[in-house]
Length: 174
Length: 154
Image 1 (cartoon, rainbow over the protein chains, first blue to last red):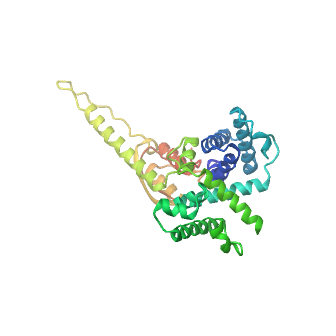
Image 2 (image 1 turned 90 degrees about the horizontal axis):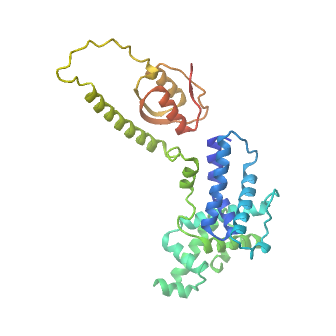
Image 3 (image 1 turned 30 degrees about the vertical axis):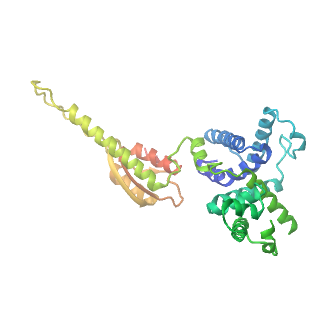
């Protein structure tokens, strides 16, 4: 793998791998550390001229194993039994990788939302506030809140790809 | 479709729960990993940085040379031996490139330094650069910028 190929793989998989690790660890800082360490390991192998035949599946396995190791080192065993993930050489399931890609695209879409729209979206989806509560907190009308949420979901859906039939009807209720 | 909506909703809830501004700074992480913060700068920014650094080095070198070559007072004048100029490859020369292709870069290097380049990448990379240094240093800098392995023919 050349430095140029490494850069290409990094740019394509960094965010999905962070999302994947975040699902396991529940901590953005820990996930960022794990993914950076994994890529640093690959980079040193690139420097030694080693080939990595299928970097995508390899990276997902490496991030899974590193994330589970970190979970154990935190003595956070409560969640381990409920995890779908098992460390080792087993491949990460395709649907798990698809979910990581989807999470990454939505994360980037939230990044790109206008500040006010994002604030309304987070108050609704993260904090679970009702539209009326959001309107009262921000000093705007309920209608404006609904419009901002619809705008946010249109952006999130749009960045994922074409809207499935009928989904526009469901947007305000999500 | 219902499965798609469930998956979408799950991802939205997950992201909303964890989203934080600047949480995963991709560009900075890549620079930290590779230890080469300047490699992935835009070529124009990299060229500007190199030009400023080269200009600063040239000014410092000129000032040092001016000071060092001033003869001490009352010192006898000693005829200087004729020192042959270094071959162009090892001479500090200025080379200017403006959106140059690989072929143009090779031609410019031949003209300025009198050497041939080999192992040029076959992609469409183009370079805008103002550089002052030897041929070997120039080639090393271009390889750093483009991730290539260009060499000077022996």
